[in-house]
Length: 373
Image (cartoon, rainbow, N blue to C red; front, side):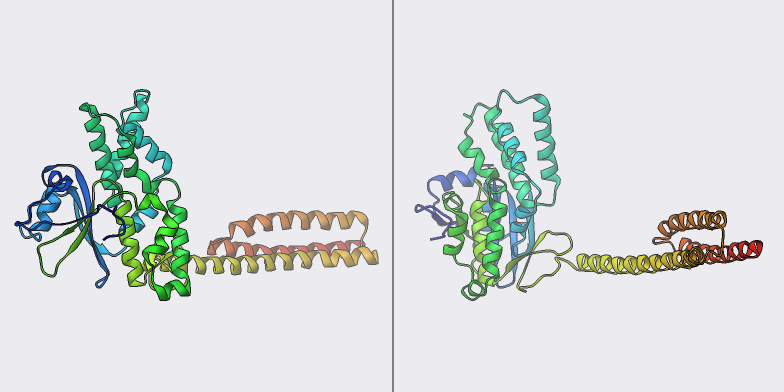
């Protein structure tokens, strides 16, 4: 028995000689949108289908031989991608609540609120995120059913958006921590571990297991009610593979890996992080060099003035004249120092200005000394 089903869970073969029964017979003819996932831990791949129940069953039953299935999506990608789509979807609990109200056709919803919900659904359907696509199509169907006279039922609508509400983000971080533990790595991730973290809500929503006719035998997990059964199914699959969650050190999105240390979700993120580190180092080095040259010019001017004051070599008026020159010189130097950041031409202008300013200071000091004598 699959752990995410209720006690009356259904493992239903779809071979031609098997007569489907109960709710599953309805599934064979309904246009209700479902999502089906095939997890292959051995090859570290998953296949995701989204479309009407009848089309999904037809595709699985014929082992995809016909090639003319009316499916919204049919993608083969890395195992665990569906989980990552849910975790990093950017879809908030507020948006989920908004779509629930829209699906239930609440009479008090303002027109602009409805338009906002419609725009959200359109963007979800156009996104590459299959989890969001499934939610968008199901919400649309529930809205259409209510418009045709079906009694609005929050218990039917709420499970559709459930993974994007409450504490899923917190849960997945706990699972990531669990998977990162040495003991958990040795024991793999068991249904008991996941059940203790996710709680009953994730296990009280039924899902279906459908066996295909191809060889080798394929086991598809299908749901038209919620993503929750598929979440648990994928957690078990990646746990069996020894895969763990990690957060990318560059873009901060989650990714799945078998390596238990800080890293990056892609080669592009690794390159961006290296580039940022290099630029930061260059900036610090450049800033240190500019600051050093500025302080050197400052001391070059004020040290002689300090000595002149101590010895009384120059009059008060002459000292004031020197200090006024130095003040203007350093003020202009500060402006050039800031402009020289990340600009090689400005940096040369800054250093040349310091050299010229020091020479002008020497000339002025010499003139003042000669004028006194």
